[in-house]
Length: 616
Image (cartoon, rainbow, N blue to C red; front, side, top):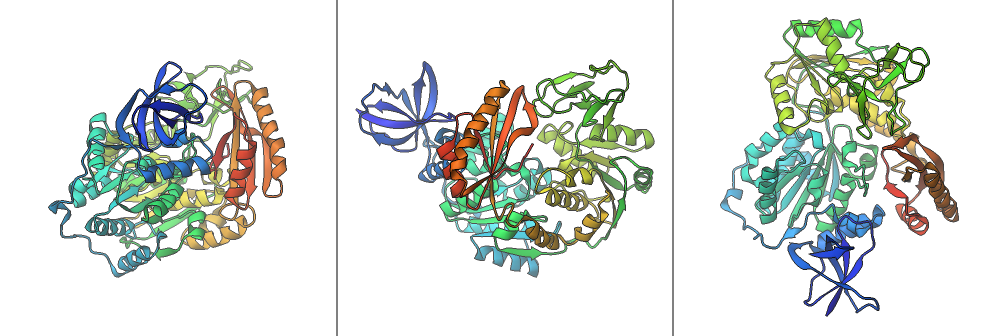
C-alpha cells in the first residue's frame, strides 16, 4: 500500500494523508472523501505509513499539475501566506487526455507590422532585459511592439500571455489580435459563454493557442513553452485580487518569468512608482495623433456647471463627441436627511447606500444588499432626503434634460454587464450613433474613441484626498488616462473640475517628473521602499474580531526590531456583510521579515493582505 499527503483544492486546511494501491506522481489530481463528502485534491508527496488510520483515494482523475505549477503554488502559498490548497485553486491543471499539437505551417506568415525607428529601439531594449517597463504615452504604439514580440515568440515555438485589466478586454483589441494572429490567439475572460470557454480551453490544452489574452486568471492556465508575459496597463488595481489569496497578478507574472525563464514586459502610459523604480524602462513619447489638447481647470465641487453644459452643447451642435468621467457609479454616493443629518446606511455594512433610480432602489456596493428608496428619514421621519456627490445615472439624466436632442450612453458596471453590451456600446459610439458617453473608471481603460473632442473630468479632488498613500498617483494617472481618450482625430478640450489646479497642471504632461517627485514623498515610509502588510479580522461578533486582533497584535511585539506596527483598530469601513472588521497594518524593510513574523504569530481569524492596495 502507498501513502500520500494530499492537499485539498480550495481548502484552507493543512494536507491530509490517504492511501492507494498503485504508485502516484506528485501533482496528480485525485478524488477523496472528506467527512462523508467528495472533494478534489492534489498529490504533494509520498509518505511512510502513519500511525493513524487513513482513508483510500477514491479515484485518480485525468488532470495533473506540472512541476512548474506546483512551484508556483508553493510560492503563492508562502508569499501570500495562505494554504497550499487555496493557491492550487487558482491554477488550471493539464488534461492528460489532450494531445499537444505540433507546430503547423499556419505559424509561418508574413508580418504586416512595420515598426517605426523609435518602436524598433524600444523592442530591442525590451528584448535585452528579463523584466522591463515600456513607459509609452497613449497612442505611442505600445500594442504594435507587443504584437511584434508575439510574432518572434511564435517563430521560436514559444507561447505568450497577454494580460489586460478585465474591463479593457475590448472588442477592438480582440479584433486586432484575431485579425493578425488568427487561430493562434485565444481570448480568455469571465464573460465567455460555457461553449466558448470550452473551445478556448481545448486550444490552450492542445497547444494550438500561441497567444493567450485575458485578465489575471489567464496567468494560471495550463501553458508550457512560455516565452513571454506582457502585463498591459500594469498600474491598474484590478490586477490585485480582493479575496483570499490576495495576490497581485503583475507580481506573479514577474515571478513566473523567473520560473519559466520567460521575458516579462510591463506596459503603461502612467506606470506605478513600484515598476518605475524597480525595473529598467524605456520611454516612448508622443503618438500617432498630431492633434492638440487644451486643458481648462474649473474651481468647482463635483457638478455639471454651466461651463460644462455649454461645452457639451457646443460639441453636440458641431456633430462631435464627448466623454464625461465621474468616479461614482449609480445616482449618488449617499442619501442624507437635511433635517437631522442622518445618512441612509446599509443594514449589514457601515457605508452609505447608493441610489439606483432605474430600479428605484438603494444598493450597497460592498455586499449588494438592496432596499426600496425610503420616502422619509428612518431616524427623524423628515421628508427632506437629499444626496451628496454626483453619480453616472444622475449625470445622464441631468444632461439629457438640458440637452434633449443629444444621444447619451451610460458607461459603467451597472449598464455594461456583459461582453456583448460592451461591444455594442463601443460600436454605437464609434459609429457616431451616440454623442456623449458618461462613465466611471471604465472610460479610462484602454478603449479607443476616435471622434472625441471634449473630455469632462469630475471628482479629481475626491480621489486626491483619499486616505491612501497612492492617492496622488491614482488621481493623476486617472486624469491622464481619461484625457488620453480624446483628441485622437481632431484638436480636443479637457475640462477638469478641481481646486488643485497647480498639482494637475504641473504634471499633466510630465508624468516622469511626477514619479521622480513621488520618490521623495515615499522614501523611508511606503512602497517601493518599504513593504506593507494588512491583517484583517472579521466576525459577526465584534468582540471576537477585536480580541483576535488584540491577541495577534500582542504576539507581534516580539518582532518589533524588524516589523513595525503602523496601526491597529477598527477598519475605516467597520462593518461589511454583517461582519465587524478590525485590522493591523505592518511595515518592514523586507517581505521575508513580514512573512516570518506573521507565520509565527498568526491567529486563525486573520486574513493576510500582502502588499495591500485597499485600506478601507
